[in-house]
Image (cartoon, rainbow, N blue to C red; front, side, top):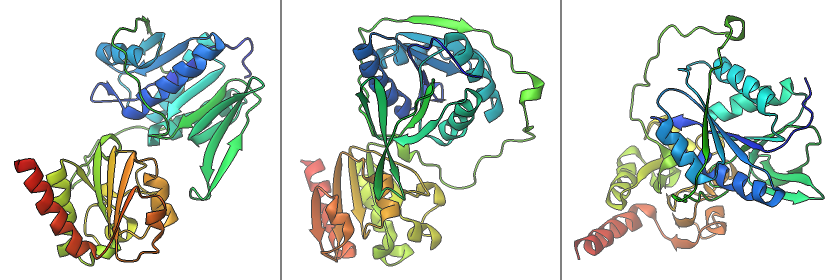
Length: 328
C-alpha cells in the first residue's frame, strides 16, 4: 500500500537492556536537525516493556514525540508488524532506523510493504530541491553512492558513527502509549529456546576505546599484548578476520564489513594492514592510531597517528608508558 499526505520523520529506537542503543540516539540527532529545517516533528518508536526512561532519553536526543508499544517481542516479524501499524497511523514521510542487524532486517520489508525504497548504511544526508540525497558506501566501502528515493515514506538505516548524538536534558516532548496486537498470521517463526552464545561477550558498537589486532601480531600468544593494551586503556578488544579465523579471539570481536561496524572515540590498530573490508568497519572512529611495520600499509591512509614498527615490540612500550602516565 502507498502512503499519501505524509509528514514528519519517524525513528525506530532500538533498545538493549531497556536503554536506547547509541546508533539510535545518533539517528535521532540527525532526524531532529532535518525536521527542524523542514518545520516537522521527530516521532520516536520504542517497542518493549518498561521503556519510560528510554523514552525520556529519546526526547533529550531529539524526539518531539515518543510512541511506546508495551509489548515483549523476540521475533523480527513481531517488530515488523507493530511498525507497519504505527507507520500506517502516523504517516511519516521518512522512516529511519540504526543500521544494526535488527534494523537491517526490519527496514527492507517496511519499504516493500509501502511500495517505497530502502537506503542501507547511510553515512550522510543532504536535502536538495526538497529531495533527500542519501550517501551510502558500496562495494565494501570503496565507492560512495548517492541515492534518491522518490516514493514516500523514504526508508533508511543509519550507520553507527555517521552522525553525532546530542543530548539536551532540557528538551521536552510527548509520550504516547499505543496498544498494538500482533496477529498470529504475522509470525512466521516460533522461538523454542534462547541459548546464549558460549564465549566472551563484547559490545564493540558501544565502546569508546577499541584496541584491535590483526595478522601482524603473529600468534595467539602475541595477541595477548592487544588484550593488555586494551585493558590499560580501559577499552575493549577488536580483531580482523584473519585473527578470528586463526582462533586468537572469539568471532564476537570481529570488526569490519563481515563483523561489527564501530565508531569509538579512539581506535588503535595493531598489526593491521588495512584491507578494505576492515577499514569500512572502523573508518568512522574519531581518532585512529595505527601500528604497522609496513610504511605503505593502507591503514596509514586513514590514521591520525601512524607508528611504523613491529607491533610486537611497540605495543609493550605503549603499555608501559600509559601505565606510567596513569600512575602520576
